[in-house]
Length: 486
Image 1: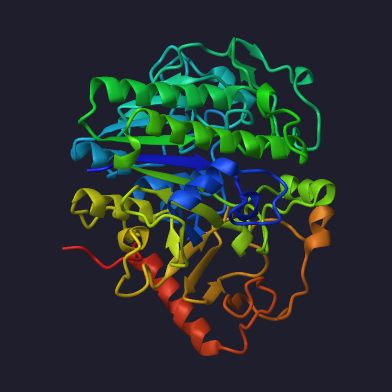
Image 2: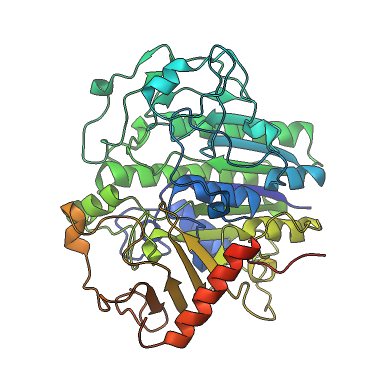
């Protein structure tokens, strides 16, 4: 059984990567090299247009809207969105004999307890102040299938709590308020909330710390358990705002702090790939690089204006939006001897599909009450010709729980507008497109003929609207978009 290394970027856009965007102003040599060594998916999608629900779906193979959770977790928000009795990707692999580890950003919710032992499950600075960090976290990643975890509860440099979790403990609790006056000040640095910070918590070097943890895990595993397969989930802060690249990367591109941050992410990918090669693990390892959703509004606007770089290129929309730019993401996989080097596939896949694909790889029979929205794309990964499309229908959701469904080129958005960002005011107004069907209650696009989603065909094709709306309602009602398993 192969080792699995899954590198999940934060807010890395389709157009941020050179092998997807020849006009990118940021060098990504390591990611490009992986594409030359493996397969590049051009029609891959995050399950959601924001962090928390996408990460839930990667770990469960299930769309997060089914939980009813709206938005994302911040600070000491929780509880863990993954239900205690739900089969997870790492748990499944552990049952097949894998060692499992996760390093970096968690962001699927955790239960912090107060000094009376009661759950806090709330956002904001005052909630963080109530936490008793001497108490264990009862629903930490190590209680959802991971043998090892080191990272942060939410966005490492954004969300009120600036402290690390090791296993289910906070070994160095926060002791004082974050002094934002000591941090870089530029257009990409504003998304940093004042909060409590632990001694030694360096916001500018955090991704290199996570990298060190992953590299040491690989080295230790190669030394102590070379015959046992492993699953490593590496979740970066990069390239989520604020853009705080490490000191070694500042000024290394011609695309400002955010360009430097993208370069740092590329470096991380390269270091993990080189470690697999150096340790003799590469030939038996599936290495995947992808992103949890599209690029952030602020980074796209300023990168377009200041550096002529478009992280959403060539799609309409950005993070939070239901349009393609909000959820079409880079997805590159290298598995020597299995993935055809330098190949490209246009098969439509979703990150929910990772779980069923891994199940097919390791010979695990998924039960009926798990991975309800997950299809295996193993044949497409290996360059084999599948009998048909990986999935006939694909679901999408936004931060507001607005839903969409796609079949082939036809994409139906069950709402008006973006489903996320407000294009009627502020800097977003400059990127608003004319509404070609202002009286329509929803949207229908043909991505083959109109990949930029500029012409709403809602009234021209009522039969397709009816079909897709009916399927969407069916998948909501039945609780799954895959056939029932026996």
